[in-house]
Amino acid sequence: MYRVIIVEDEKVLRKGLTNLVPWEELGFEVCGAFADGEEAYVWLKTNPCDVVLTDIMMGKMDGLELARQIHIESPFIKVVILSGYADFSNARAAIQYGVKDFLEKPVDEDELAGTFRKIKNELDEEGQENPDREELATWSQLLVLEINSGNNASIGNVLGDYMDRIVSLPLSTIQKRLEYLCYEIARVYKSRGIDVWTVTNEFYSIMSVYKQKDYQALYNCVLEMFLALKAGIENKGEGETDDYIIERIKRYIQNHLGEDIGNVEIAKAHRLHPVYMGKLFREQTGMTLSEYTIKVRMERACELLKKNKYSIGEIGRMVGYNASYYFSAVFKKYTGFTPTEYRDRVTKT
Image (cartoon, rainbow, N blue to C red; front, side, top):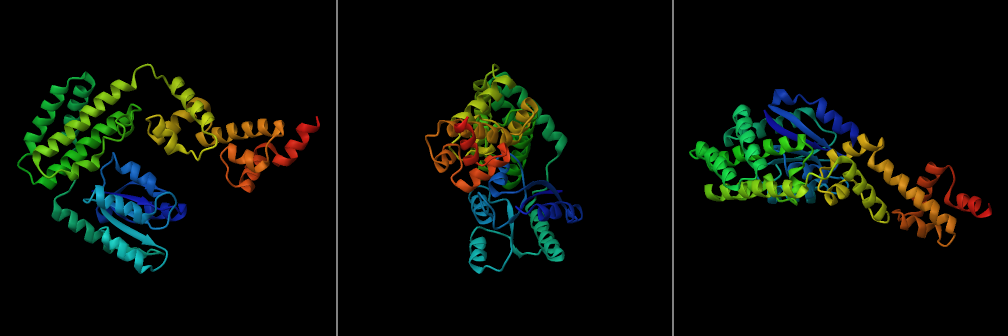
């Protein structure tokens, strides 16, 4: 099976593409579904993928920008773009970024199936079928043991032994094997609450494997990633308990209330994976990061309103809302009063 991810901000369509298309019959498995190009781009940093099916119009990173980044960093990944209308300028840009097809919404199932049958044939010809999982699991476990032991020479030796086994394969196939090896190691650490991308300051990027043009360069590239991972884990320290991490996240939110902060920004600041961080925060506090952020913002807004020194718009901006009407709506939902009503009540008592 080849791996495909879906990037679509419309929830109904995202679920439909994920669950209703007969992916297995086409030779694919859906390995992720994302509401924004940025989420997908972060995921691709540490996960193997063969095809990206993406909408063109989205929030933080649209489909064309995602395609451009993939074209630069991961030219082996095939991209199929969905658009709500015929836009020939976008179609031209998509071709420039190596996009395999440009499909109009509403999606025609037969047309989509035809596109993915062609892509599967291309992937078959390129010899990029997934490597043996048991073999990868064995080698990844050996490398994890050496990374944890802190012995640089042993890490290099084990990696060299693995590459000696695949040295006779075509370069593109060796790249694919190393991609999956790096992914398996990233998956092991993720299960332990360690995101390899963040602990290495974004150095552990599977995409970089495909930038190397010969065997030695591939060995050096992957070894440097493993050594950076070893150093990152050591620097992470054993003193960072879950409680300590949660307190650091809370302080960060309290100190950045006036900024546009979300899960991705907070996770990067704390060298954590956004999904792991969100799950940990909810387990430890009983609320989501978004709920906690709103709570802190509203409590701070109440304090500022009591002082009666700032306008409603100024207070909104001080707690992270540039639009006064949106700040007022959130405040009323949280307190039951508009900011003006609240100020009138507290200043009269």
